Image 1 (cartoon, one colour):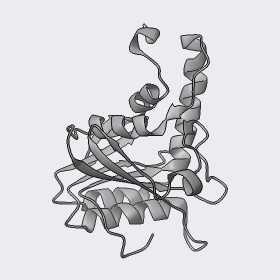
Image 2 (tube, helix red, strand yellow; image 1 turned 60 degrees about the vertical axis):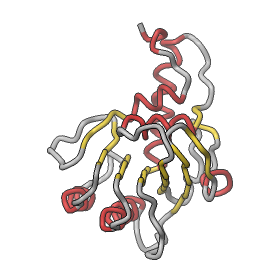
Image 3 (cartoon, rainbow, N blue to C red; image 1 turned 180 degrees about the vertical axis):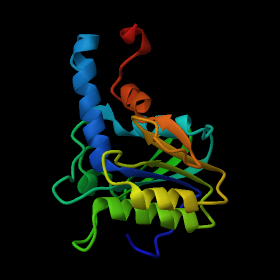
Length: 194
């Protein structure tokens, strides 16, 4: 990730490989329960739901979404748009919480996806322009470096981690369940789950 990258006041950092795995798992699990073929998840709806779950109020907010992925995983197959380089990177949309600018980065051969994610989180955490950080890391990865970065982030209005399981250790951030936003983006209605 480039050092000269200019952050917005609200930054959402997403491990795209992890998100795709979660999205596909949730779709496979819930399709038989709701007894219908599920459509591809709508990426804009998913990102809007995450911003709302993190407490961002409807309005004219600037939201910068940064997807981190690795070679061979350029697509998030559970959602639309799907291709990180061709359809997502450099795009934007307006939603009820504001303007979303989308970016996708992969590590160079010298680092891993997890290390790039931790570095991006650190850079956003150090940037004085950034007020809120939302992040969805790969929960199955070694999170040692990420834990250190999370503990060093200070002076933000909000720091929200999204995942499928609350972390075993207490972090100085709020935890929200990633699955709720994925269910909404897949078009699953609450009455279908009763």
